[in-house]
Length: 207
Image (cartoon, rainbow, N blue to C red; front, top):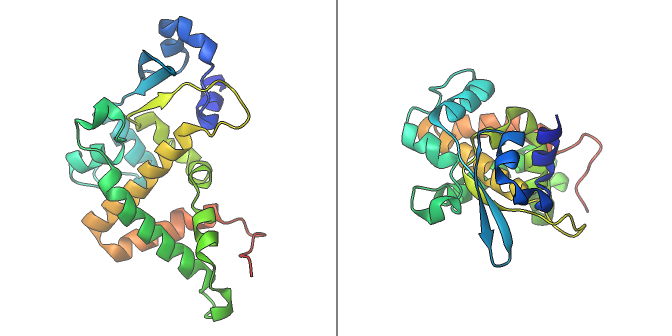
């Protein structure tokens, strides 16, 4: 429970890095290395093919929902991982964002009322990294993440870096569905599994 709470906030106590072995065992096998840098420390997360298959089994009930193993691994690989020397998910993100945006727009226009057209600022707010991370927390995408994370100092103005990594993972997942299953299936996935969690029932767009 303690380790999951730490991951959810994206915060790893900076003082803990004096004993990286202990830090690794405290969280999970995903913590690979602690690196010292001029401006602090970074934590390297890695995952196995089994970790990725476990994610797909949780979310889709099948490890073969996405047939390409290379694409499955790319979904979870942030550009910071191994300094971009392996295929990473950034090329997929913009497609995934576009699909999520369409699904969000459809959500507000479902009753055909053009007065409900949201501003683009509303759309970006509803799919913020924090909201994406919270909406998909039960999927545990961090269990398969591959990235480098800075170790935070605990200051109140610091934004959890894990949220941004996880949001790129989810956008990449949506893009992969689009590429392998088609746009209709990708929109359906967002409509049924994502958008309702991004928009609380009592929250409205600004007019």
